[in-house]
Image (cartoon, rainbow, N blue to C red; front, top):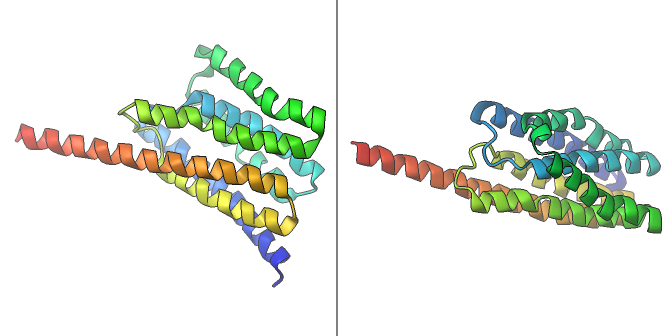
Length: 206
């Protein structure tokens, strides 16, 4: 098997992991609630998904197109669960942020500049979730497993981009992957701290 063929396998594997990680986050929200989940992060994910679908069409990559197209409805359900109509300012600010880092660079410099811009945007987009995890002791709604799967998916996408010789997405996805791994580690820490608090409370209750 050539590396190009192998990279295609990586690409489709990344598509599958993207679906799994998003479904896991949705399920955790359904079971544990939305505490600690950032609307700003997820609404911008929707905007960026639309960008990747368009870029995938231009790059003639069904993997890139389907990687965002399939998860888009799930992301919309997550955003709906976070009641965006109560935080219209967040939704509009997210749109402005997306336009500044992706639409404007694409118009001015072409698709490569837009992809580099979305790499920065994908990293910054995860910052509200990172801040939320640092600030809030209750992160029961955040699935660390989902973000860890997302970081693994980012690594697979990077392998795919090497085989496809798409260097701008390679850099962009690498930046986002580091941020996703940070969220996964922070969520794991918060969940561990929450379990310890419950154990202490139970001990004192006895």
